[in-house]
Length: 299
Image (cartoon, rainbow, N blue to C red; front, side, top):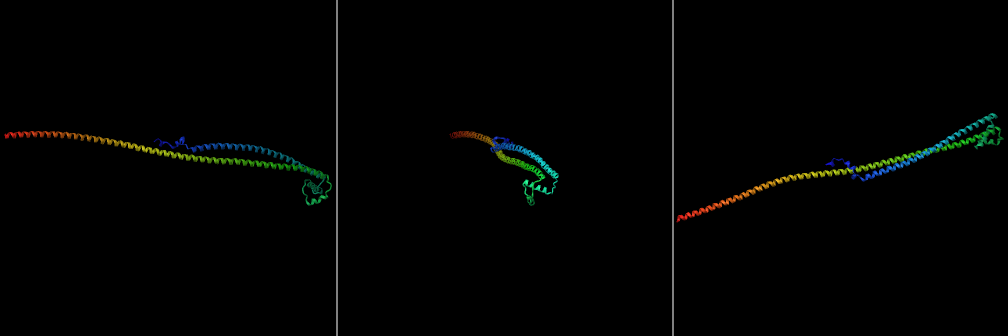
């Protein structure tokens, strides 16, 4: 039969045999893929916007850091210049670095900077007299250098804060990127799981259709077998009919022959009866004749 020659995959393309669960799964997978793309587009767009903001913020911070560093270079130059001037003053005034005047200047510098004194320096405090001209000018240069030093410390603190802010931005950016990648990985896993589930549903549907196709094939084979058996019975009936007709014809012929024989026998019987009757009649005539002759003889 033709159905036995066709591949069962023909049923898969026939809407009549399509599994509704498979169709729903396909639609669900398509919608999920669309939503996934839209969600990833939003996440990616947000990440790109944040990245641009971070880059802009990081750029501004780097620019600020460079400006502060340049200021510190200038301040450091001023401090070095103040030290050079103090050295020149000491040379001009002939003050040795180990002299009591220089040691007293160091105590005055600590007091100006509000730094703690050693025990010996504290004992020397009551003995300090009027400041010398060298000490006054040197102390003024030290004050100027201290102001530049304070500005350098403030700038350095700002540089440290900006550097920390940049580092935090980079960490957050890495976290955001990691989150996006994790989300992407999660979506890929879910997508793979969905595809696997759909594939399993398709496989189940295919197996179901294979079973249906096999059932149809077996049913067709059974119908074919029944048809062959019916044809064989018809052929056998035809042969039986032929034999029966031949036997009936033979019976008819024999019956006809017997009938003919019977009819012929009846004719023979009638002929015999007629012959017997004739003989009896002839015998009666003969008897009559004999009687007549006997009477004649007596007379």
